[in-house]
Length: 70
Image (cartoon, rainbow, N blue to C red; front, side, top):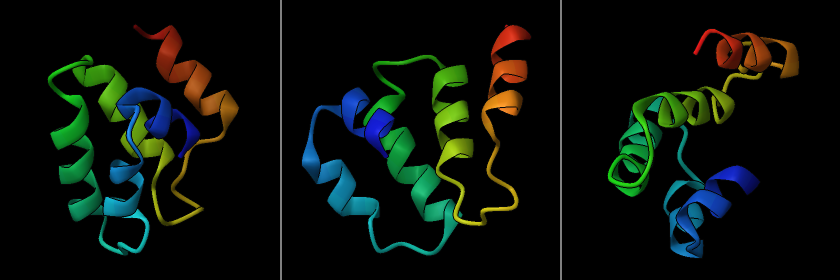
């Protein structure tokens, strides 16, 4: 959430996703706020980091692997 806030520089973005339980809606909001400013890869990583299901959310090792492939 901190990275998302830093990327958007607006609290409205946090309000838009704070109560959502549907990852498709969250993805749409992230794309809305970020795709014009950032690469698809950055937005994709951020979507993974904000995954609702904790078991599907990447840990730091997985994030490093994703980043090192780029």
